[in-house]
Length: 170
Image (cartoon, rainbow, N blue to C red; front, top):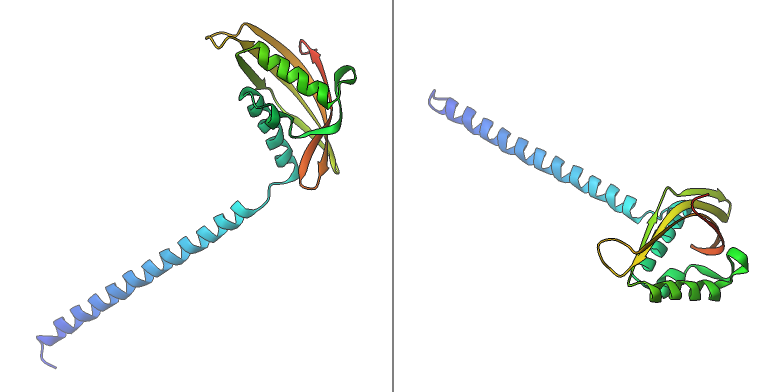
């Protein structure tokens, strides 16, 4: 083996080794990326638990009221709903419609939400600040309430069957 070819062979060997090393690290990065993607996909497909779905339902009702969407706000309300002073579901719908007619803008700020799960039922307690007005910078009216609600699980959906509220946060 002539001396001039040994460095060339060594360089070629090193070049091949580097190329194989780069290829291996590319494959390894690709495999790690694929595994990470699969983990995220499985985590994203996991169904949220009952408490998370209930919290999401409360938030959807809040957003629907602010968006003046009576149907969306009333969607989780059970047919046998009983509210303050014996109010039924139809009465709750009328109360909401009356408030929306009386105010151009409605604001709903929900305080900390406490969820107590009891099997297929739950009690949710929270404070809420309701504001209403003509859509100007400051609301014309505001009222704070302490709210206690009763929920039951129907299939995979939560249904509001009871609500009590006291004005003034007391």
